[in-house]
Image (cartoon, rainbow, N blue to C red; front, side, top):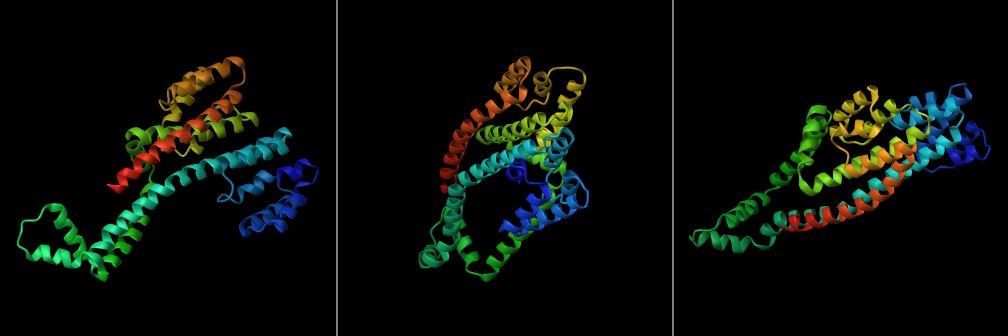
Length: 308
């Protein structure tokens, strides 16, 4: 869309072309809806507001700033770059977890399915021998007895579905979600990984919003919300209060007690040079390399744990 608009094609026409050429049904419906709304006189930011499940608050604010500043094509390009970076980050995290999750599934399947199918006679012999058995063997025999019944598997399905809905409901509560995230941040290797992901997301949104002309207070607040880290969201008001009092951006963000020292020091240098967004973009390139290393360390530590 940004490329077509930048090449001189009017926005309604670009959206109409997008709705007819794309194979994605949801994108086709959304493009057609936006085209109709813009043709009727609405701005694109107001048309996007009618689709809150498709467009985020950050995207709508960026487009609104581009409309008011006459830089819509530039903003659309920045949104495309931002979404591409965000998608790459998500895919990077998900792909790194594929092997540990598969190992975990295989180990669980072996522990549940193998005893009743392959060890039934051996376990019966041990049970009838009258010998005092160690507790791991007793646990294995109990699992074997349970997994021989169809009710065991129905119970697992019920627990899985109920646990999923209970988890979704619990994560809607901000206090529970923040407490759970604080627990994750107390795990040594995992905490560094989660903070790095949060900082990268914060930096991507921060640079995009700041370059589009947003004021600093709104930029910091929206960037914290887009980080996906409830601990940062809860602590960012401390930084905003310091910004209102006239302190520098780096010292204000330090009050959130979240950002690495290297990020704050680089941001301070960027402020002194008058280019905080540029220095943040440079830091993000380095942090992405660091994230690859941390993901490798984390997944390598998960595999033996799951095997055990």
